[in-house]
Amino acid sequence: MGFISSFRTRPRSTSLAAILVITVALAGVLTYEAWDAARSQRATAERALRDYASFAAWEFSVAAKEYLYSTLVLIFSPISTDEPLMAGEQLKQPGVLSRLMTAEYRCPDFPAYYFRVDLPSRHLVVEGKAPPMTLQRWIRDTVLTDVAHLYKRDMIYSSVSGNVDGEPCSIVYQVKWRSDNTPAAAYGFRLCMSSFATPAFGKAMSKARLLPATLTGDAPNDSILSVVVTDGMGHPLWRSPRQFPGEYKSESRLPYFGGLVSTVAINPQFANRLVIGGLPQSRLPLLLGVLALTVALATLGVLQLRREDELARLRSDFITSVSHELRTPLSQLRMFAETLLLGRVRSDDERHRSLEIIDQEARRLSHLVENILQFSRAERHAVKLCPIEGPLAPQLRDAIEVFSPIALARQVRITTRFDDALRAPTDASALRQMVLNLLDNAVKYGPSGQEILVTLSSAGRAVRITVDDQGPGIPADAKERIWEPFQRLDRDANSAVAGSGIGLSVVRELAVLHGGRAWFEPIEGGSRFVIELPLATVAAA
Ligand code: ADP
Image (cartoon, rainbow, N blue to C red; front, side, top):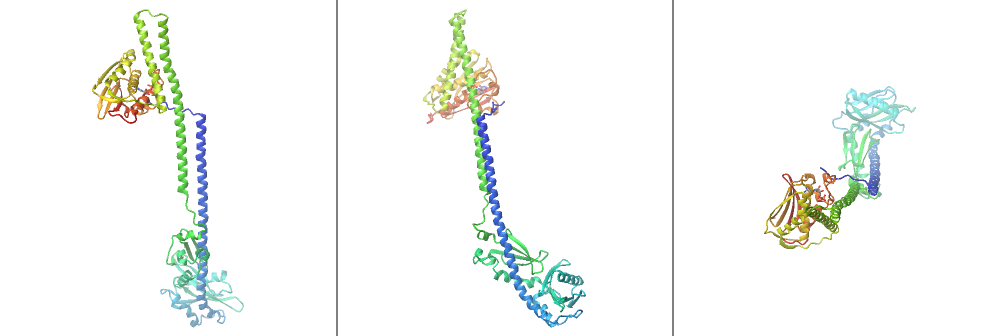
């Protein structure tokens, strides 16, 4: 069985809830915009860093090329000053070409050879230890293609890299021209890029300025960036001594190194110095925190609104039910008073009965009014108790005595089991009101003819008063909420049993003000309501 919890939407709270929802939506939009702005700022800064990396890669390739160039020019210049060759002429001057073969530029495991491609006849001649046929074919075809498409008349040499049988291979060659400006032959040798270019890369890294000094100050290259050079197949050929993670990196081909690729990565710790104003930090956690807080506050606001609405509804129900509760005894009072006044009673017994009913309804009325007053005082926090130490049993008997006409009217028998010796500091009228409220509920919700048991016993440093009835009991899920103001079980709210939903809240309030507590316990075939009050006076009272 549940409580009356239907939520009648009121225009004010609906519009407030809508405002809160719009506030959250706006906070969401603002958070998104701020996050997006921070993200694009960061993306711009990162792009700038990658641009620096590609700028440095370009500078690196230019510097390395200069070292490479100066070396190869030394090798090829003597050839270029030779007499032009005639078509079909044999490879000659091994004395000059043997420079190409110096150990410095050859890998130890390369066969020692140099080649000549006779361009008109497309014929390859190899001098020295001949390489495998596939390699020879590759050299010839590569040179022919390169001369046809890339080699320019004013070039001193050209270098080409490729893969032969899955192995990287680089060659470097020079074209000899005839007097009629047609290419006669290409002379060259296989270059061991790793051993040949390594000194060039090393020098470029240590000597060249790869980024503008205005940005880097005097910091050495290897504290700002790292470089890896790979061949066409991705095998690393050379790497700078310090390596940095590839967060801000750029990859570019080294144009003068036959298709080698350099990857330059900026040191992330240096990134803040390179970007003006520093690298923007992610503000996502902060923004999400603010958004979550806004959502939490708005949710709290909506919940509060719902509570207020619920309370307003309960208050209005309360007024209706209180009016109803007042009307019933009042009409009884009027009816029996009129009967007596008009002398409509037929016997003394009837007169007595009428007076009994008047008395009983007047008690009920004053009890109800007392409850309402008590409740309103509690709402204003204006309850004042005057606890006086004394025996409890006589006070309980008084309360039961006051209540007996009402019990009698429903043929309810009240039995008591009291420990007469028990004393405690209590406010007499508050105690009476608590007991009367519990007795009233027991009679109201229990069957007529039932037996109500009231006990008084000690429980450690407290006294316990219980009221047991033989009524329908309280569902487990409602045993706490019945103590809240205006709360009634559905079955009773929709029944003819009059009630305002404040009786138990008054009981608990008064028990707590005594420094005690009040609760419900299910018992076999009924309910038990317990009030526990401390044996010693408490400051709260
Ligand atoms: P009221 O009796 O005026 O409705 P209370 O605060 O005294 O308000 O009780 C709250 C609700 O708890 C009652 O409406 C009723 O549904 C339930 N209740 C209280 N006492 C009993 C009882 N002895 N047996 C069954 N239900 C009870």
